Image (tube, rainbow, N blue to C red):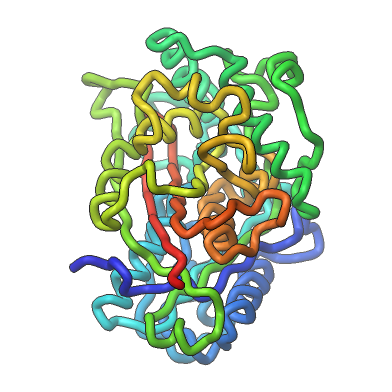
Length: 397
C-alpha cells in the first residue's frame, strides 16, 4: 500500500531549550507533545497512536503514554534506528493512518545529554545517533581498540578524500552554510557565522575531521503530529502531505566488500522518490542529518543531488546557503549549529522541512515557493552500520 497523500503532518514543535538542568526527560517529551498538538489545534484526547524511540525513559512508549495521560491509544511503535528513528516513525505513522489503524499519531523525542542524560562517549554512536548495547556483537570486537563514532566518521571522510579528491575546505563549506542559517535562529546553540578557514583551523578531532566539522551536543527535543487528510483539512493549518518514504539498513557483513564512501541513502532515497513520483531536481529544500560534515556530503551524493564523488564540488562556495545556492539545507542551523539532542536528532529534520513547506521558516532563510521538501536521516555509524530513512513532503494548495 502506498502512503502517497494518505497522511498529513498537522503539527510540529521544537523545544527551545538547549540546556535543561531543571527538567526531566519525560517532562521534555510532554512539553514537546503539547507544543506540537497546540500547533495542530488538537488535544491529548485526540491522540490515538504514539511513537517514540530509545530516548524515552522507563518502559518507553508505555511509560510516556502513562505520563502524558493518553487515554485513547490503539497503536504504538517504538522502532529504534538511532538518528533516523523519527523519520522512520513518520513513515510508519503514515502507513498506520493509511491502513486505518489510527487517525492522530503523536511522535516525540527528548533528551538531556548535557545534564547526564546519555552524553555521547567512546563507542556509543554519539554522532550518528544510537549507542551500542553491552550485548551487541560489534562491541566486543571493536571497543577493545578504543573506537568511537568520531573515528568511524573520520575514516569515512578520509576514504572519500582518497577516492574522489574531496578536501577539508569543501567539507568546511557545509559548516559555513549551517552557520549562515543559525545566525537567524534565536534558539541555536551556535549562532556565530564561521568561515572555511576557521573550520579547517579548529582543532583536529578525528583526522581529517576538525572540531567544527562535528555536531553540537544539546538538551532538547521535538514532536510531530501526523493525521488523516480529512482531519488535516479541518484544522485550518497549512497542509503538508507525505508523498513518499523509504528506509534501509547498511551493515558491514564482517567487512566483506565494505565501502565507506556511501550510506544507506542509496536505497532509502530512490524508494522515497519513486513513491512520491518526483526527482531530486524537483526538491526545493533539503533537511539532511548532519552529525558531521561528511555525513551531509555523502547523503547529498547518495540521494541523487549530484554524482558520487562530486559532493565536494557541489557543497562548495555556498551552494547549500538559502538565497545563494541551488540546494538550501538545514535552515535552522541543523545539528552542526542548532540542536542535536539525545544522539537522535532526526526529528528536527522533519520539523524544519515542515516549516519550510508551510512558509513558516525565518524570513531570512525561507525558500521561495517551497512546495516540495525532503527530510533524511542516518542512525548508527555512517558507511559502516546504520539505518537510513527518507521522507518527501509537499505543500498542498
